[in-house]
Figure 1 (cartoon, rainbow, N blue to C red):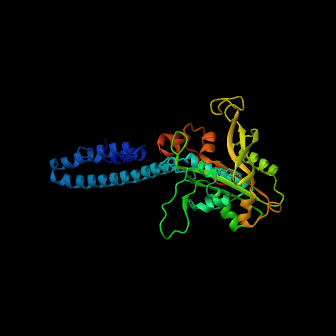
Figure 2: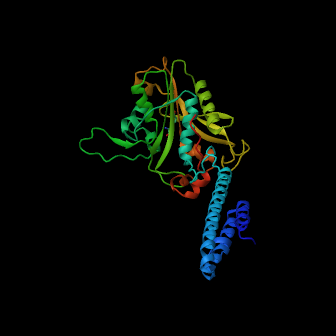
Figure 3: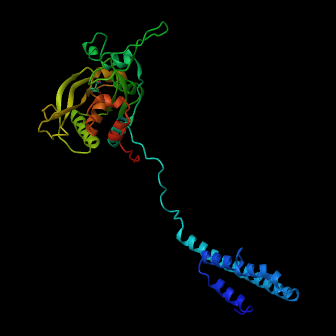
Length: 351
Ligand code: DAH
């Protein structure tokens, strides 16, 4: 090859290199340790001195030109590669972020309390408070259960150890009905209140735990009748269970209501034909209720002829077991991860 053409052929090859790898091969072939230019430079020493100088200058110029051509091509190829990467690896920042940890679930009792509150809120009830450590007076006496009333024995009570400074007997409330007394003392009718919370009884077996939950409701307003109560309770159950099932009222006795009743709902599982859950009766007992007793209304200075009302109470665990299909009451309190994964409820954003 004519030595004056060599740079042209090489620079053309360099300009035509399609990839960085190809370009690197060319560089090694020309300027690498054993490259053709390197080789020729090494051989300079063998030339006679007068030829060596001119040839040396020529080769160095060639080397310089090739280095520049290689650098220029390299810059072009790298820019193209970067442009290509930017185009294909573009990050779409509008995509939702991947969730690094799975979302937890609500304990079924928490979910039940929220669902109960939301159903009652729809019916116009607002939250009211009653303490878990309550006086015997508010837990029993003012609810028309004077000392020695036989119904006190239905609720095995935890009494707090009395000490000298206490003027009253204190108990762990056995029922959320103390919310009725607290409300009557603090609020003027008309009102609709709910109290959802813990209650305590000295009971422990397959179907009882010493601490459980109740929901209490109370509506006091001129013109309120037993029929309003039946309507509100059947609508409450429809909202809570998410389906319309028949309900019925069965006469019952509670000291704080007169007349009193229990509400049964057609069995969720067999729709009334009879199964294990409803013990073949076709009905599930869900609530206690009645028209607020005149002795209880009197706590708030109210007269049943002017501002009558109704009240109701139910066990939250029982409602949760039926709604979510939890087979054993004790599961609620054993904190097994498996139980929470199976029966936990996915939170619904509050409306
Ligand atoms: N307090 C009752 C209980 O623990 C439940 C109950 C029944 C509450 C009737 C009420 C009611 O407000 O009217 O068994």
